[in-house]
Length: 358
Image (cartoon, rainbow, N blue to C red):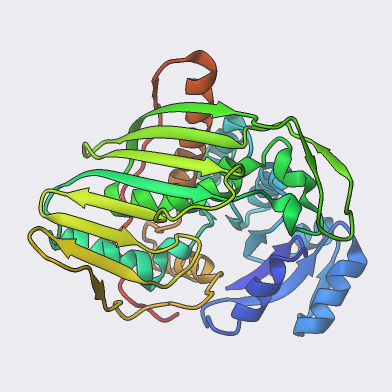
């Protein structure tokens, strides 16, 4: 399948590098708001065409668009591509606003086109090893889980961190999709969310270069504590924070009637995976199943292309990404309205992903 990339920022590099790994699609064109940036990427990676966005969308040979624009532009670019008859795979989140997510899904349905979305790390060997353990009953019935993504904030290291504190940013929208997508792969969809969110400091000072000393007005919560009730009965406690200097908590742990699984970082494709069964004295590291362990971003594109060609449901489908989007908004709504929020959307738990080469 012939693919074009819209958005040639930093994230585009790993997609362009990994395109050589996957053989069911080729990147034929790149575009960016700044044409010179697209031309640089095309030259660097040997891409045949460097386009403006309009030129790429109008190229009849491009069958699928990888949407790597900033989150605020995700919805408009996705809808433009769908209206041009092209499938779309986008970076996370699906959109910033729920209404825009709904617009994308409705248009893809009307046009009979696929929409897929990052993250695809849940297709990696790490999360899929945990999936296999759960499906085999290694810890019995899952009862509860914890999830922690906590750091001190991007102003300490990122060259241009202001976005992370503006609408569409923050720890929930930045990292939440990795954790929530992994939990859906492992436990299925959620039914209800509850949250407490706050802006801990109204202003941040950049201590990284080149913008050292500049001030950032914080617009989004930076400390979010939530409880998620999954349809299968599992209750998950999750913290997303840019206010924690250090901690020793796991990324994700799942607690069952017969034991506990320690889940690897959902922002990576590999391990380690640890298991401790009831009455077992020590944790054991579980060998990973055959699969993708390195930085394999673009795997979701290959999986969706295979699904299109075989006319099957994709594991990175837009319905899952929309469910994640509603979960994140639901936590904020719960905090603002001081009540539980019943989710209106759901999705299918994706099929297990046994190592496939494309």
